[in-house]
Length: 499
Picture 1 (cartoon, rainbow, N blue to C red):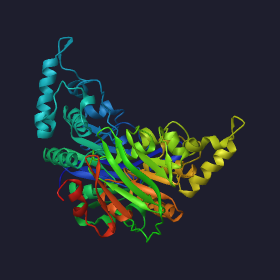
Picture 2 (cartoon, rainbow, N blue to C red; picture 1 turned 135 degrees about the vertical axis):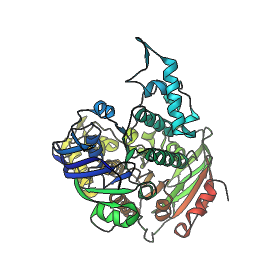
Picture 3 (cartoon, rainbow, N blue to C red; picture 1 turned 90 degrees about the horizontal axis):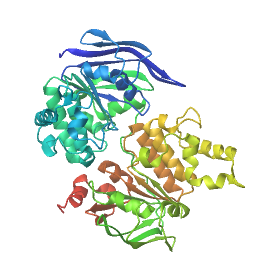
């Protein structure tokens, strides 16, 4: 058995109104990849933030190489060999790769920064990480890099010191499949060097591919640790949610009606090319394609975020003139964006304010906002979607990802949307919350709502869709019926041009 280099015992942490961690534990071995699993709000991120110095524990002990430690901040942690690769990367976009890596420790000649040496040291780090890291230059601005390349810069920051532990928080949530493969190669390389990895992800398939052990948390409590090789996904899910949950919801036989929405020859720049389709009442129309295929661009153009160059949008037999999102909202079209934190929510505003934002005008009487009516409408949505929040006045930024996603959805339900576009509706949320959203989508179709569902997860889109549109290079290359009888290989063949 490998040496235990980090041990957390009886760790507790509270925030106002919330017990985030209650007597939890974690043991990390040299050279292992150790997954942390649990529903949103289970305490995973709080554990790694305490380990990496972002938060201070209320009680408990942390042992690092056999010695009790109490690191006061991230700088102290980094100096002692513990680094965090956050989900939201902390890079200075207008600085170079090398400047970001050595920002707190510039190599110097006397009092002057030694730029040549800094670039040389950056190249050495790139060589250490391999081919993927050699695809950009030390003096290249970070803002010109892809998301995968930016994560490599964060990793180079971590290994520029004598790192022993790296915590990855949802490392592949914004990566393409190709970038994910490269990330896994890199993680294996780091563990081969003896570096221990803490890996937080909602994607169970990744955990079974890359991790050695998994620790499960629920409602801030430690449930248990298992060797990944000795369990199945259903075992982990059961530990996480305390009940049996199918990983992917199997849709009922929907009563799909007549067409209620149509897009004809929609074009936007070179990203959306003559896209045409119909959407029926009570139907879930899936959209699938690899990164850059035009799925999201089509949705954003329909909703008016991007201004179409040409094409026609028809709802209930009437042509719509959608020049901006407000026009789509008035036409009872809702859009659940894939970037819930950047575009779907105002993180500093309250739960109630976010829920009622698209329908605010209905709560204004004689120029004055009726706060009681607004609160009543918000409370109805909180109860309907089982949103976990201490109160309606709570800032949305303090809630878990799953509850934030429910609030994004509730905005459009509260606005009486008849056409709902869901772009990656379950990205970054746990399996329990996923199951709830799948059921919610089914309930909405029973009410006669029509849904466009964009997803990068093939099992998800195959399970949930009545029909499936496959995109490639800005165009629809296939329209597939009998979706649940299709294999993933069938769909991928169209998406990557092998069919």
